[in-house]
Image 1: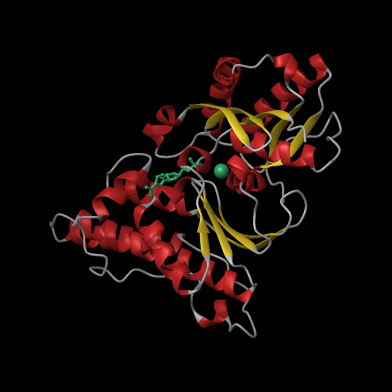
Image 2: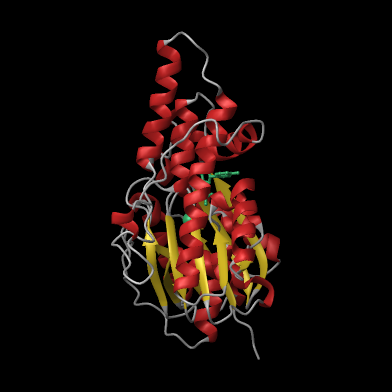
Length: 347
Ligand code: KG4
Ligand code: ZN
């Protein structure tokens, strides 16, 4: 069977990613990030991200074609992230993809960024098992999905009501003066700290949110991290008002434990209660050492197999978009209309 050669374009946040896949084989995964340009602000500035995509689009495309050693003429179809994400950032990728498709007559697929994160797990011929869930955790999103067939049947089981998990890491790192992005620094500092030193809140775990397995509450699989961030800020203020140095490592460890405890607890509940025997872990926060360890432990206890794509496919990238495009083409899904828009709130 012929495996389609797909170009995938990702520009929903601060990574300009262009990848090339032949079927499920990743041939190129070129990424240029504008992360360092946002560092001074402690978070992604949409206008800076959009401008960076504009500057990086052509060089990253050239890099991907060189890496894969293919001619543009041989590409069978182009796939691009149409949403959700930052609108100005998305528009650069979508406009670039449309221009390429228009100039060459190649079919174009506008795809959903979250589904692409899931598609990353299909790299190198992995067949997604029928009963699979996904925990997507990054700076922009925090979701639990039920994955049926990759190319059609996905259901959102839960999501954050406020901050994304990675965003919570970034904001807490800022409160603690640890720089941006916060995830890797907090992960490291936490390894020297005591996770039970502070009793930080576990958002949306009270009974009124959770209900019971038989009668699920409205937020059983949803998350909230903004109260946790505030609790860390209050603790720091307490130390400072007494003229004491805040114990950074204990604060990091206790904060991290609160995040990871809720993420893993709700993901495992969502799997067991929905008959999902496999769980894909993806997004930038999938790099977190404590998240990986606790998820492995709790999933093993619940007979759930954890599937974690290679890290370069976990963070935002173009190869995951190409993998989803290849799945769509192989499944015979027709390409998108030529003039589909970028949609920042794509459901
Ligand atoms: O997927 P990603 O590269 O971009 C999007 O946000 O879409 O994720 C970046 C996020 C940042 O918030 C960063 O702080 C977090 O992932 N992150 C981590 C770790 N490494 C990156 N969070 C916790 N622990 C880590 N080791
Ligand atoms: Zn993402």
